[in-house]
Length: 379
Ligand SMILES: Cc1cc2nc3c(=O)[nH]c(=O)nc-3n(C[C@H](O)[C@H](O)[C@H](O)COP(=O)(O)OP(=O)(O)OC[C@H]3O[C@@H](n4cnc5c(N)ncnc54)[C@H](O)[C@@H]3O)c2cc1C
Figure (tube, protein in one colour):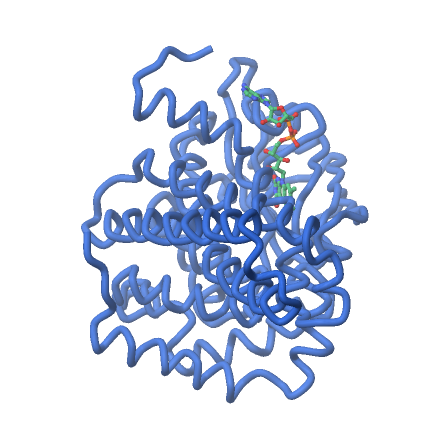
């Protein structure tokens, strides 16, 4: 396979870079980026940055005109994502809105839900969180116990979520809750985070402070109109959203730059000739390149409007493996490289541990590949 960007795509990348240079404040690299995109400061920043990006036609360019976009192809969406990730993701949590929450509502939302939410997302005004995982339901998501009990005009929600990124600053939650006793009788609700009965408790983690939260729901009333799709039929919707999430963050792009920096440092220190270092660095480079091209295979599928395939899982594990190998490489040879250096790379390094966990663990991706690509039996 040969891959090269077209003239227009290269020009688009320049346009994105110019916008970032113009819109990011002078203290972006020293003040905001080090805090990570789950921090309160970066999330607050995203509320001013994303509307400006939207004004320049760069926030939802890949959306249909009807919803405020320009029907740009998924290649442009990824060029934008690569450049944003490289600068520390100044869109904050709004990368989720534009890449999969909005598109999921376009496909499965009611006209009222689309009218209520898509415009706000396209204008860059709103922060969402995703309430899926629970203490007893991560990989086995169908085991979730948060319950939405049917009442007159809506549902009453009780239960607990965990690991919910951005919940402490979110305006809405894309919530999964059980609406029946059968294992997969689960529904999705669009829930305002200021609803009575919601309590958010941040907890510390390796990713940026404030990123991770528990959410407690106590008798939270959610109207019927907030349910997405049919009652108890959330599974297709969630699979659709996750297929975008798993190939949503171009880790290969920053990872490769971090590797280049490590190799440059080792060369300066006279260690670049060490055959073991060369072999390990070469293998990581190859994995990041493989991850990049496998991601582009998925982008190509999207551009052709093919249904989500197992290639998304394959690309995901390749990127996570490259990130894990890079983390080990840095810990072995340059444990100090990140202490005083580039904040964006440091933040990337800190969050790499989550690359094999969030959006479905490494092992879950392998199970999906075993079933989807190799036809091996479940269980
Ligand atoms: C940084 C970060 C951000 C996150 N953000 C969110 C968020 O915004 N919203 C949200 O809902 N969740 C979020 N999560 C949660 C994430 O989706 C879960 O951690 C993940 O699905 C794994 O679930 P678990 O932690 O319960 O682990 P478990 O499911 O208990 O898994 C533990 C280990 O067992 C393995 N395992 C489990 N079942 C199998 C199996 N059948 N076959 C082989 N191996 C298996 C897993 O691979 C894993 O290694 C986030 C997690 C992280 C780290």
